[in-house]
Length: 169
Image 1 (cartoon, rainbow, N blue to C red):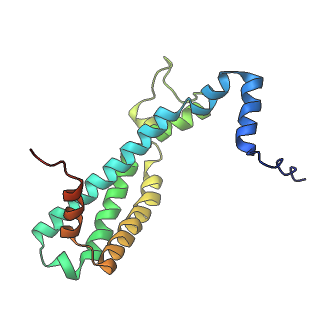
Image 2 (spheres, rainbow, N blue to C red):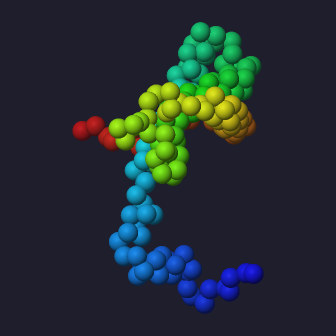
Image 3 (cartoon, rainbow, N blue to C red):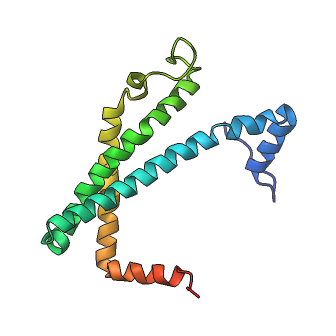
């Protein structure tokens, strides 16, 4: 029922990859890493959108309502995180749809075999928003709690960036 343990001093993952490469040749690496660029594009779009929207909203709210800076900072972080999560889910959803279409053999693409229309690319985005919004809100809430608990303020973060700055001659 269980696979035998790997031989001593052998990492089974590399051994299995070597066996696949011997059996299939270069196609093994094409299968493993063929979607890497698409996956990185999805993750990059999601992450950049999440942070840009969060930082922009948070700065805007704290600029318009300075009284929220200390007393309500956790609420602001949670609300801005939820909106950032929703925006990031919408931005990265079409790429996930392309992954799903490719995994299903291309069913659902246009009749010419090209990319599906916007209606198909964004189908199912509502549940995705409901999944990601609370998670990202919680992520930024925990970040803000940790930052507050450790006493890290904006000035502390700027000092770190000053250390990394290139000296001017």
